[in-house]
Amino acid sequence: MSVNKEIKKITTHTIQKMKAAGEKISMITAYDFSFARIFDASGIDIILVGDSASNVMAGHETTLPITLDQMIYHASSVVRGTNRCLVVVDLPFGSYQGNSKEALNSAIRIMKETGGHAVKLEGGEEVVESVKRIISTGIPVMGHLGLTPQSIYKFGTYTVRAKEQAEAEKLKKDALLLQEAGCFAIVLEKIPATLAREVSESLHIPTIGIGAGMFCDGQVLVMHDMLGINTEFKPRFLRQYLNLHEQIMGAMHQYISDIKAGSFPSEKEQY
Ligand code: KIV
Image 1 (tube, rainbow, N blue to C red):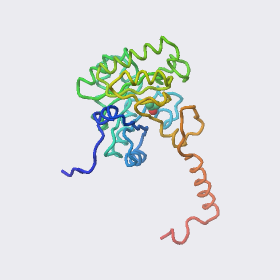
Image 2 (image 1 turned 120 degrees about the vertical axis):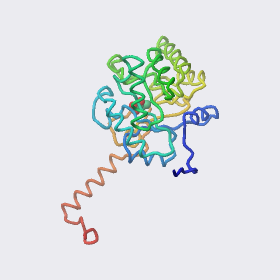
Image 3 (image 1 turned 135 degrees about the vertical axis):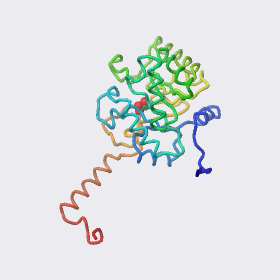
Image 4 (image 1 turned 180 degrees about the horizontal axis):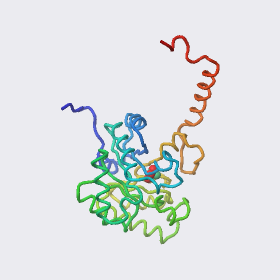
């Protein structure tokens, strides 16, 4: 057996120690082997195989259509591209809401068939029993509160959540319940920064924000948004680090015109 002793693998414990040490946690989504390999080599702490694959990989309007089998395909590809970072896999809509046995069976399939290290699911009080049952078998769970895209038809819009007192109070209670149930971290999506700060300071487990401001213990972005592959999506919280759409377009135009002009391939590029 060859074990590379040089590589320090990130675990759920590493993530929790980072919060205790005041070190911010970096997370990005990925859905395939090639990008996962680049992200892992870049030093990212966590790769999330998000059910946002339903939007950015499959072109659906919501995250609802993606299936457990499809998530397993994406996650197993990502895992093959990593050897250092923590890989968290989303439980898709319909794979855990029925009851805690269904939730456990879905989580077990993800762990057995992908080699991922943890699962993520959306919701608070209503999923606590499932969270406890999954964790009781040794599978780490990341929670997800605030804007929970699997409930989009209940919310009606993708606008900022928990601006009203009652919803903010419920979110704070849910965060504590998830922590008590044993979650190792919680994603806070699209909530006011002041609320995210209060929640982050009240928990000993880390919060990972997306559109939840600077006081979260870590940040996550969808890779297609932060790399500028998808340029139509421009929410205020998004920082775009590249314009891959423009760069790929430029390369494609050059490639097509080289073919049309007969300048590709050249003599050096043939046998
Ligand atoms: O599916 C996803 O990409 C997510 C992130 C937005 C946190 O859940």
